[in-house]
Length: 289
Ligand SMILES: Nc1nc2c(ncn2[C@@H]2O[C@H](COP(=O)(O)OP(=O)(O)OP(=O)(O)O)[C@@H](O)[C@H]2O)c(=O)[nH]1
Ligand SMILES: [Mg+2]
Image (cartoon, rainbow, N blue to C red; front, side, top):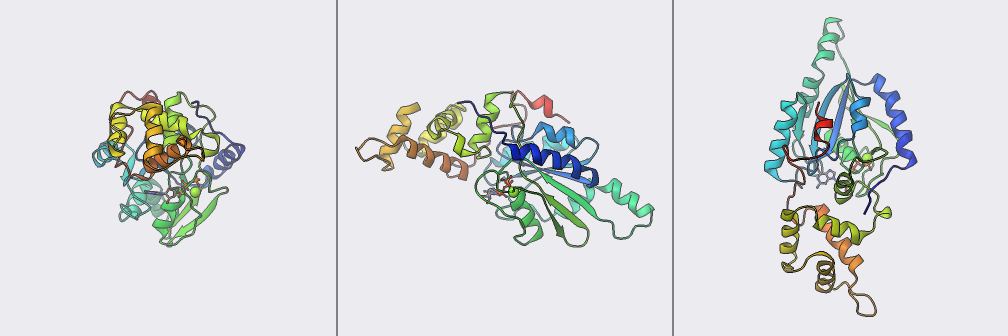
């Protein structure tokens, strides 16, 4: 299946970001820890040139712990401040203030020299849809200030949120880019729920996820106890096993595909990382800072 999603509100959101970027001190980029390369929007690199940057590997509860560690080291070795966090369960956020101050040290020192006592750090929270930008803000602030939801495109407009006296966060709508370089990027984005499900054929996505790698394929078939089934036969057997049948008694493969996609996204199949530093990921070099 060809994955592509670039609705009009994203063009608008990108334009707004170009304006807002002028008044912010720091860009906090939230990525999905399961796909830290595919979930980085190359447009953000362009928009944020010259600004202090930080990358947060969110949903680290759903990705492989050793991969999280490897990615943190990877980004840090490229000079980017990085942390693994789980915004849903509020893990990894304790040092956030310190990290933000570290990322903005140049500005803070400049302000100090100028005699500014209460300098304020303005940070823009950016990322692709559904990576947990708004959930991160709520977890960091300790209050439900931003709307969140288990689908992409929940945040429609921007919103400033204060954290204590000296940090201001700007929640922004998730944005993708007009054309993915390769379909595997689109597939990874769809597999974690960053592409609108309404434009996706569930059965095709399920089969594409099965085809992601031998390790993923094996893990899925083992989890459902369908070790000897693959491809469409896997979906049919899963439908029968889970009682997804149509009126005529036929297996409802669409329902089975949706069930499997939900299990995959929510971590029921275990903690899976689809990318590792050093993998031959087509775009990796492009994102190298
Ligand atoms: N397991 C897990 N789920 C998370 C985490 N962070 C966010 N979520 C879930 O991911 C979904 C999306 O969260 P949002 O905060 O709405 O994502 P967003 O990036 O603001 O999305 P848009 O506004 O649509 O761009 C919600 O169902 C959250 O509960 C996390 O660290 N771990
Ligand atoms: Mg949001």
